[in-house]
Length: 114
Image 1 (tube, helix red, strand yellow):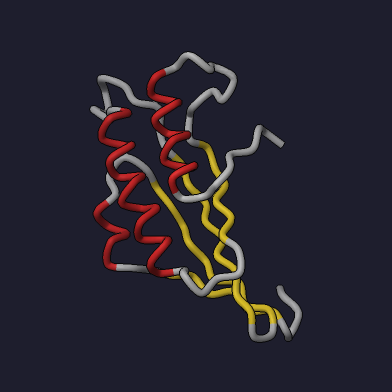
Image 2: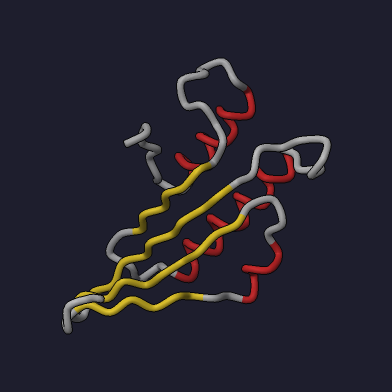
């Protein structure tokens, strides 16, 4: 339940079905005449059973960030949270560094666990 001046709308885009290596939910949170983007992401850990790879995830993640930049360009702020199955403390992890570069490229800053 939200206050009358706050509304929440689930956003579904045509690109949503093209991401196979992670799940996401995007919402538009409107407060008076301003709106925010709130996204929740889950990336299952890659395994031989599910056939997921970090390389494919990073490719899809880049497309997702481009979609957000276009779709939510009028948003005051964009917040993405979730479980990416990366350990942010592994500074020498090449795949983690690629993930973080994508974040920096989109002017996002990853936070540690809360």
